[in-house]
Structures are given as structure tokens and as C-alpha cells.
Image 1 (spheres, rainbow, N blue to C red):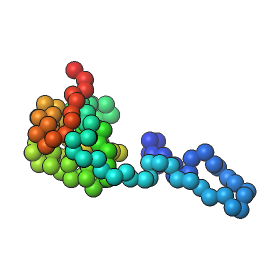
Image 2 (tube, rainbow, N blue to C red):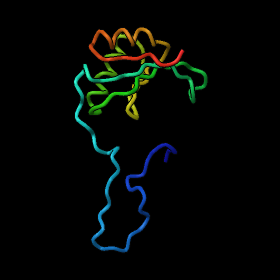
Image 3 (spheres, one colour):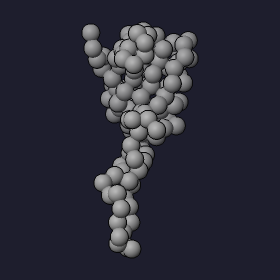
Length: 116
């Protein structure tokens, strides 16, 4: 199991109470997707844990996984490169910070550039 994955049952190791029910952590509950104008996305470059290769990260999306994957697919197609959607962020291979910023603005998202 990866170190950054969270356990579904936090805090309780064992309970002798027969009526006790576990409460799942909040990260398993998907929220309704916010409208495009209310999304606050951040675009940044990253090369940590990637053997020096540069990727562009889009973070801050609030909503369902299907909508995030749809946005990720659109961005990958517009840039003509590969990438992935995982852990609530879009990872685009290569240095496309400015291009993604302009594409997201054109789609109607509120976008901020992060980093130098």
C-alpha cells in the first residue's frame, strides 16, 4: 500500500461496543461539481518524484471524478500530450503552464499561476 493512501477507518483501531458503527472519512464522499465560474484552479510546474522530468499540475478542482477526468481529457487533447488524473489533480506531461492557463481561462475557469 502506498504511503499517501488514507485508511477508510481513522482513529478507531478496535471497539468492543456491539452497537458502534464506523464513520468513513470525508474523502470518500464526492461533492457536487461547482459551476465553471466558481472553480478556483491553480496551474504549476512540478518535477518532484519524477526523475527530473517536468509536468504541469492543475489543482483545486471541486467536484465529481468524472467531471475532473473530462477536463483532464480536454486539456491533454488541446496540448497533444499524455497525462493522468489522480488524487484530485490533473498531471500533464511537459511544460504547458501558460498554454493551460489560457485554455482554462477560455473555458471560463478562474485560474491562478503558481510558482515562478
